[in-house]
Image 1 (cartoon, rainbow, N blue to C red):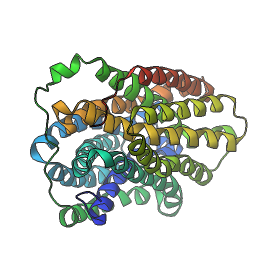
Image 2: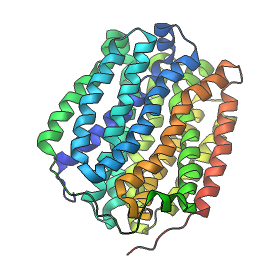
Image 3: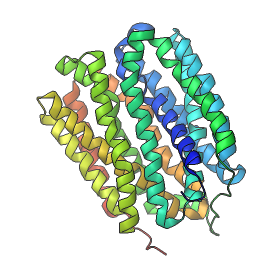
Length: 387
């Protein structure tokens, strides 16, 4: 397990799962949050997007600090901040206060996500980094699956506040696990001659940042975030049925991430796996355009989720290796900012499309067009040969 034992890997993966699970957690119950806050879809989307907007900037600062102060310290601070923000969100019926709680949660997520990945990047050598990031993404997938699957029944049993109270409790428990189960390690050494200005003049940086991370994530979250609502509106699924279906879709991220990570290590190529994931995602978007049966739509969503399992971990590894001159944490944070900015647009952007009456077919068409753009971007990228 590199420089980590199984306990360390479990705590870090669970922390990543907490971050992404809490980010996606409101999506199975969008209708219920509309009633709680007395807002439309765009309003609920803005509350969901408040997490990703604050996270986009927080993780950028956290990536820089992780290379200088150490990742473990930032993760611990992030878990405590998550406990505060998720507690506010769980128990507030006020829309502005709920919005603030989500924003605090996003700041916490930024202090968890990139430092945790930077820690794992430093704990494994190049030959095992695909596997390491695959495990990390598997933890993320597990958090998403459990959140989508468990929030509806927890809501039916305990109401909105009781269901979402699990997140501050988990954050505190993981803080103890990190404190006593994860050792300190030195960050990956930076190469000489690197600077943000040099990176800004690198064509590949902009291809990954805009063409792959930003565009690709904006396409993917259309499916992951809105699938439960789509199934409820289009096929009459109940809240519990939509939650189960959403969990099945998100399970692709958990199941396939370690597989694609191992494949990237075996092939000694990140770009080939990124291309495979992009093609899988596009296939899912196109199937959704013609799907007239719920299980075909769920299968299409699973393809998109599998595509995420191939693209998200590999863009992290690619960025950390390709732009290592500025530090792995900084490089990962910069590229990840592209994806997170698009996620912050997901709720209000697609929510507005639905509020205007264009329907889910328009959402899937936009995702398909974005999927084509991402494939073009990855085909234009260059990859450093293995050492």
